[in-house]
Length: 610
Ligand code: M6R
Image 1 (cartoon, protein in one colour):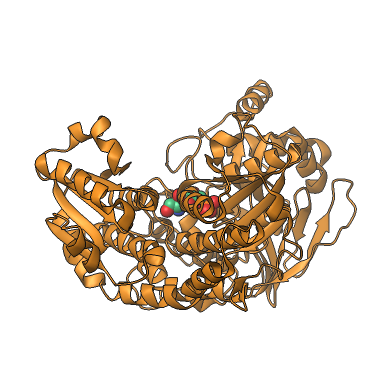
Image 2 (tube, rainbow, N blue to C red):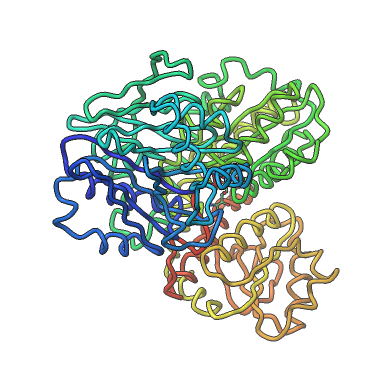
């Protein structure tokens, strides 16, 4: 939710800021803005819409020679996307960019209106900037003023601030929103995320909550609220800038789907030893898992859908009850948590506000927490009692693909480890499944990817539909929830996922002539039932696309108008292949419609606000 970048140093700052914003655009892209300092004066340029509009407004030579500035790309929370609501927000004394939500902004606004402040935007951020201005005029010290501001704020923030009195110094502070700072050979940077600093350095500091960073252009200083100098731990990025580029694909989403085999290898391989799942590198003693009585998997969106797959696997293999919870509900509904429960948080970014709040809620109740996270060192990873990292590498497209696949694979591993500790499977059964995950899944996905052109052709037959339904049973119904989300978020086609037996209890009234119904049939024990569901929708005129193997199609005489045939493989790993096919289907529908696949409307990659 919103991307922040800042640079102060020896180089021209505007190209650096624009490049950084381009990289951070996945965090929000409804408007953007920059404040740069030139000849001791702060100038702000802002624009509703994509970054290219802002870039056009930043015409040289006026920006040439400006060596410090802050920039922002926005995902609107308070006030519609517009020039006036874009960041930075400026006052007589300062200019500020913000990622997060100030919950008490209305009270702050009322208070400052009485002091004579007039607001030009609808944003919470402008109120925060004004309050900082108010305190700065009073104490005449940026550090003291910033800490006073932070004491008054409720909600989440990462701020980058330039004061008119010190135009070459950037101040940065955060609470519940990510922010990193970095020192390079010729300047200092702040950023919401790592990819934006990678062209300049691999070394960075993840700013601790409540620590103020002061970037002079040559050095970075850190201070606590008492004004004392404090230290921060330097971290080094382990992946490179190439991994975050499109690498010849039209879209990041397609590239990331093609990275699934490698991501799966990296996630599974290090955790299989002598044929069994082994978490000892990350969880030195995981025997506590054996005494867990109930799991709560808590996450949002795609990560929550991976949790549904995890529930199927863990209940099937380890016979352990699993609740899957939407994080935004979990945190407020006072869930029943008992001492032998384990709360598992799943998150690609590790910064999702609701997931982080759910984690904190579980911890406040004394419940042990385990995070499954992709971004190393992210908030969820750091705050959970234990963490298992997925190894998807950077995921840039807003629509999550490879992250989901590796989350499912890690949950598969967790199910097998639990099965071992709880003696619910024989060693032979566990070893056989571990081997399938290790050796067969990546290769299965590679074979699945070869069908991309076939999927594209099928996509062309459904791309103009208004509504599309996904049906399946057992684990297929969980896969359908994700398939449906993928389609609707990037193609804007209304879509719903149903356990196929449930459709006839109401929703089938929406199935009329030519409405596409995508049927997943990968589980032989319920295939006959899925076939009944297909017959029911076909009888009402539906255009059915069935996703299955050739063998199942023949054996169960599945009736269908169109096919997406999965490669032959052991049924227990077919969900991975079906997932990839469904992701490709959503991708091709969106691409064929000429939509912005990687940056669908109204969305952002990392949802760091409630
Ligand atoms: O970073 P997270 O995994 O915590 O994000 C959770 C959801 O916002 C995310 O999975 C979202 O639903 C996907 N980007 C949709 O493709």
